[in-house]
Image 1 (spheres, rainbow, N blue to C red):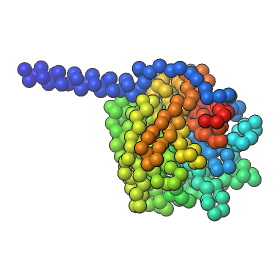
Image 2 (cartoon, rainbow, N blue to C red; image 1 turned 60 degrees about the vertical axis):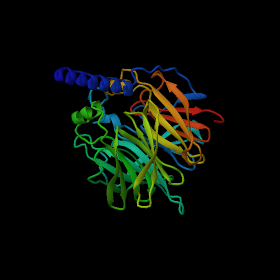
Image 3 (cartoon, rainbow, N blue to C red; image 1 turned 30 degrees about the vertical axis):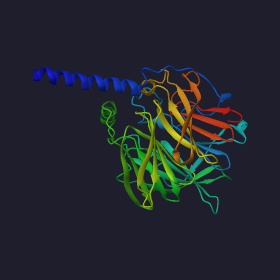
Image 4 (cartoon, helix red, strand yellow; image 1 turned 30 degrees about the horizontal axis):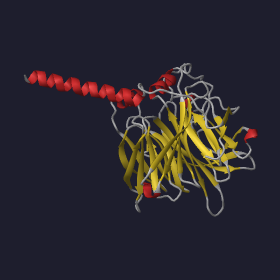
Length: 364
């Protein structure tokens, strides 16, 4: 009798896990393409616009080339000549398309493969500092490279490299000051095979860390693939995207920079990077409609993986949440959607390792 009970419990646990995994991976989802207005591909972006962040004056900074080495597990998926780049797109003058920014200064340019980015604009001087997550292709060491933007020369001048024990699997970051930022560790493990096991086992071992002028600490943990992270315009809340579970978590920032969770929004989609429309505080999120298709694409770039954009609006004090499905593509136009930045009724949609789209969507 006991054997039968143990067997029944074991089968139930396994079946529940398989169903939960299939649900997270998007096996039961239907994709219907739609666009919010006139959209086109932006020439010059061929190997990804993984993260996009827009300045107060409409300059979009774009990280590209993360898939050059190390990120996509099949070395045949991407040519070895792909290198990490940062591009600039002036949303106010979209016909100019993108310009590649020159990288200057003493840092490891050869092993610079940018992932998440965040922009700090000094309130007194207007200086722009771009913080960039960079992954070393062979050692898997993560660094935060800090640059100063020089608009006269269209260059990024390197200021500092940040490393640390808690910055071990960094996906994204959000800057609060000249050398102050929160960051997300998407996994606990660094080794690719162990990361895969961690994901398939649905182990919520991702974390949020905090760095301030040389001091670092983990301030929250227990997340299923902690991905994009951002802050509300008033610096009251931190938003975190969990790509595997399809959740966006909202945390209140405490005086000591610790975090208290206030709300969790389940979206049933592979949420990636989060950008904030500063005038309204709305969240714009680049997403993978079916996470399984993105995993397949990461092994073979000839396979299909879609892109989706969600907008989240909050009521006063988070009492109401309104989610709008802005853009959906099954992979015919964009593969592997990862980012969405909105500026004055214009939208940029990025991908991990494919192209970037520009949309004019009118009043929204």
